[in-house]
Image 1 (cartoon, one colour):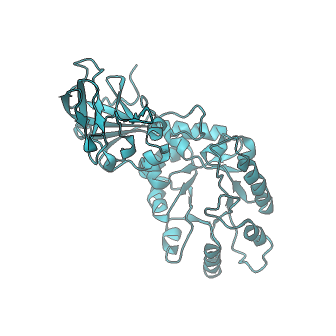
Image 2: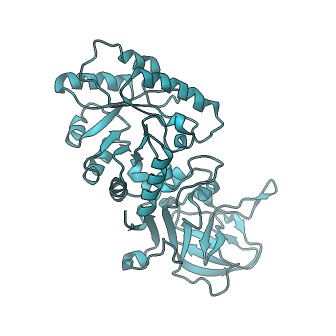
Image 3: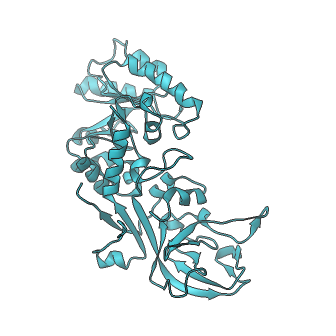
Amino acid sequence: MTDRFTILDAPEEFLSAPLRLTVDLSAIAENWREMARRSGKARAAAVVKADAYGLGIEDVGQMLYRAGARDFFVAVPAEGATLRPYAPEARIFVLSGIWPGQEEIFFENDLVPVIASEEQLAFWMAVLTERGPYPCALHVDTGFNRLGLPMADALALTDDVSRPASLDPVLVMSHLACGDDPSSPMNRQQLEKFREVSAAFEGVDSSLSASAGIFLGSDYHFDLTRPGIALYGGEAVSGARNPMQPVVKAEARILQIREAKAGESVSYGATHVLARDSRLAVTSVGYADGYLRNLSGSGIALRGTRIAGAEGVSASRRVPVVGRVTMDLSVFDITDLPDNAVRSGDYIELLGPSMPLDEVARAAGTIGYEMLTGLGLRYERIYLEGED
């Protein structure tokens, strides 16, 4: 059976690129449908901030809109303006809110500001006094201590007779600090606080859960959920099996295969010393491409434990990174592959269906979010889509 990431008819610039990134838009659409199903009676939005987690807001947004998403979340208004032509009838919420000088981009692109501070609220009420009714969302802090109106201020709004009559939020929302840890007592604490907020804004849609919160169950779903990382195939819940379909496959071209002797070192700092005669594949990926320096492998023992670094996949087998990852190059040990299995010009899978995103992230000491959003500009990209 053909791997769905296999490109049967790709342009030459993709087939010969030093770095390749295949994005399966159909898998993103299917992941959204799965999160919509898990959201039960709540509607599922789609979070496409940070250029759709590094994968391209235009292509991803269009596919999600075709799949049925009608509520989108972006971080800044420029992202909303970029998305608007691809989601013409959708509500697009801007999580960073609105500041003086941004009114035109909001109004021209029909963007909904998420009011997230007392300063923004004061400015927004002044705008409404002059302009008249326009939708907004209210972000209320229930314990995260990041963005959000203090609960007391948000609750006071419901009885504030001095507020403009045109201040009529269409959504009240908050965000879980520990949603990825189902055992955390903070989830229940925030839930109880948000229930109070939701009840105070009777008749206004409520939203508490991003990807991880959806998995916590129906108590956390309210009216609207906000799946993000799960749409892109990443793990939403720590320590649990990931039910989402893989979405991306990143590959680096092998620029050179070289022989090296036992006792010789590899890459900067000579941190990796070969324990055997080895075959090494020098590839065209480095930290400038988001392949983080922390993925470096070392043969040096640290308190008796070898620093393993990351792995890639070549000829259907895993091969380890050896030596330091550099700006443009990384080295993989292919000694254990059959002699003729790999040659210069072939590709090594850095992350994808055979090398899970979050496993690579853990090797780097980070999370899948950072791996995706850090993908560099040098990848030649191709988008796959089915019948969605």
